[in-house]
Image (cartoon, rainbow, N blue to C red; front, side):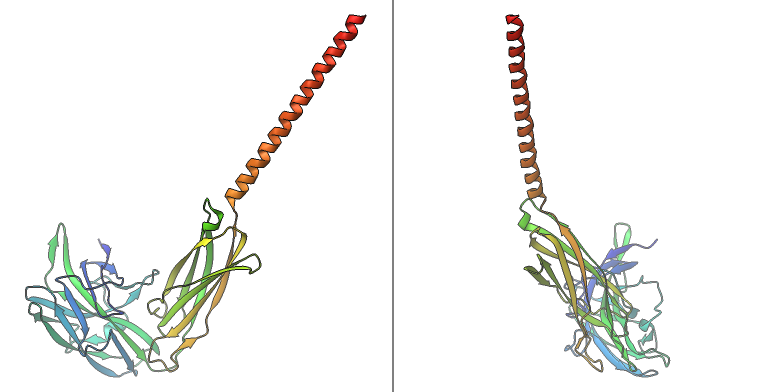
Length: 340
C-alpha cells in the first residue's frame, strides 16, 4: 500500500528541498531545511538549481554538494528522479520505487543509477554526476531532480521514515522552442456579507502549459461593476515554473467587493520563459473573463420587510374600515326597525 504524505520543505527556488517522508510518494512545497536533516545544493554555491542547455546525444557533467545537518555521521544515498507538478502548483517526486521514465533516467553517478557517500556530522561532500541526453530527445525543457536519501530509515510508529532531499535539474534540449500557456476554465463565486460593501469574490482558473518550455506565470484579476464605474484589481504571486504538459489551478480572493449587481472578472496572465531560452522574456499574455451576479441580500430583505410591513398595515387598516362600516350599517338597520 502506498502512503502519500506532504513533504514539509522545498527549496527549489531558494536552494534545496529537505523533508522527512515515508518510503512512498509525496508532494512538496516551499519551506526551509529541517533541523538535523539533509541538504543538497550545487557545488559552486552560486545557483539555486541545475539548468542545463543540451544537444541530443550530448553528455554533460556537474557536481552536487550533499550536507549532513545532523550531529552524527550518516550514509547518504544520491540518485535522480523525474520531477512532477501537482494541480496546486507544487513540485513532487514519484514513489521511490517507481523507475524514471523521463529525464530522471538520463542521470548517472560514475556509471551507476545511485551512489552512497559517508558524510560526517555538520559536514558536506561533493558528488559528481553525468547527464546523457538521448539522441531522440525532444526539443524543450525536461525536468528532473537530484535526490539525496539517508541510507538507513528511522522507525516512527509503524512507518519507516527516511530523509529525502532534492534539487531541481532542468535540461533544455536544443531545437524548436514553442512556449505556450493556455488560460482555461475561468469561474467566479461571490459571497455576500451583512454589510453589502464587504462581499468577497473568488476567481478560479486553470493554467495549462501546452508548449515545450517551462513557464513562469503572474496572474492579475480586474473586477468591474456598474459599466466600469467601479473597479478593483489584484496581482497574484508568480507561480513556480510550470513544467511542459502540467496544469495548475489558481484561486484568487478579492475582499470588500460591494454587491452592486453584475460583476465582471477579467483574468490576464503575464508569462515568461525560464532563463536560457532562445527568446527569453515576456510572451503574449492570455486573458479570459467570467461574470457573477452579486445581490445585496440584506438590502433586498430589508426592502421586502418594509414592503411586507406596509402591506400588513394596509390590510389591517382596510379591515378596520370594513368593520367600522359594518357597525354603522348595523346601527342604521336597528334604527329603521325601531321606527317601524
